[in-house]
Image (cartoon, rainbow, N blue to C red; front, side, top):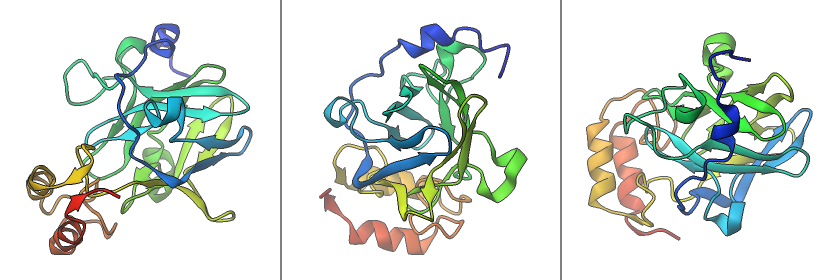
Length: 212
């Protein structure tokens, strides 16, 4: 798919630092038109499931039909986002708008492109009010639908206001929301209305404390 991403094998065997997945335990499935259901949470008992962060993702998605899909190792070279200039620094980024960009690596299907927004517009892969939405694309496996309206299944975030995924909604998360005040979406846009504002602040405060 991209000739510059030639270090796929190295990327595929790189294990992310262990971190508990922040994907919902009940809403954790996305549908691939040619690969069936994918599970975003349960890798290695949840310790290596997908983690969707403020700026980038990490961890693994599991497919019964095609195996593991690696979202990134959680350590972008610049500390902020994956460059996707080579396989060693490849992964899925979360843009300030909430749209996703970059590439995941499937051990049996190759690269999966999450940066679909420029080509398909509003249905591009994105964070949308505490859940994922839109489509990612694989040259070898086709479209992956992050929120299948037909089945009612989608990839949701567990305790969405816990932006740093430390298991509690507290001052650190409040600081993140305020730092993104009036931003056009992204994780702090908790209600998915396209702007980080007072409604999101109210939702964060309503979920203050230890995550369920």
